[in-house]
Length: 362
Image 1 (tube, rainbow, N blue to C red):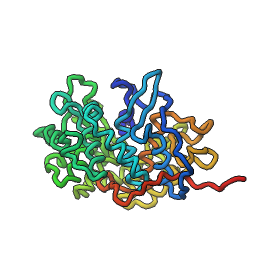
Image 2 (image 1 turned 180 degrees about the horizontal axis):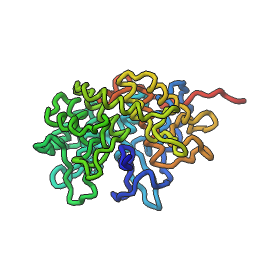
Image 3 (image 1 turned 30 degrees about the vertical axis):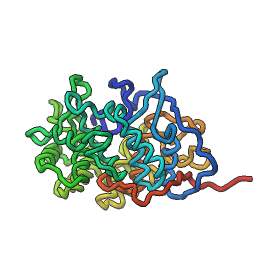
Image 4 (image 1 turned 45 degrees about the vertical axis):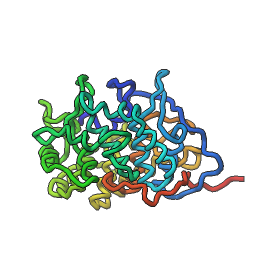
């Protein structure tokens, strides 16, 4: 299994190759919400409510590592999608979207659109814009979908542009996200879908590494397979989906996880669980949900209750490994809500930022 998974897109420190799995950080979080937040027994709303309370100034995710503070655009974008999928925090989701639309913030993430332009980043922000009812062709002065289309090669692959080769992704995750974003606006080039299908491994899964595959061959990955499944479902290419889900199902362990002892955690469970829900693989979906629920912080966690961190045990409330736990919570929220990235919407979302219901004590 390759180590470069969808999870590791989150929070690269100072544009280096250090990944979220290798760092422990402290967070610059928003102060506690004034007043008493409404209680909820809904796991998606509780997880999203905790994530909302991590927004600095109610608009962005920040975290600090070794004295360096990062305004994390990617985690902020996934926070918006998580809030919308759970139907909570409507005002903060709008504020975070407005922050992402600031030209310096936006261009600092997606690139300048010419010599430096990143497909995954464009697609993620386009999905945020679409979920928030904003036009991705005029978001922060950027034609996000137009710039994605401009990076479509003759092969059907969407390719990054950068003078720094370390920043080039050119992988299944980028292809899948681009297809999802373009589909939501009504038009996906057939060549792009055909290219994604062509990358399917012999066992039915999808590789997380660069495409074309390196000399080590096609090595299927849980999260890339789950994300490719969402994209193929969205455009109606169900043929490859069955094989992909059969492989994904074969990888799930008896406890619902996708990793074995001593590494059983929630890190890689959110996206596969969502894929099981979207393809009506009920037993596997329930296993994944049960595992994620077992990680959700309970009443002993104080204001952190409802969070779905990467590890079951927190030594004390607030003792989180950022940004890994933020990422874990965001994708767990999507799994709990059961909403595809092709369908996430602010419609019907409330302004409340709920917290997991717990009995009051005297």
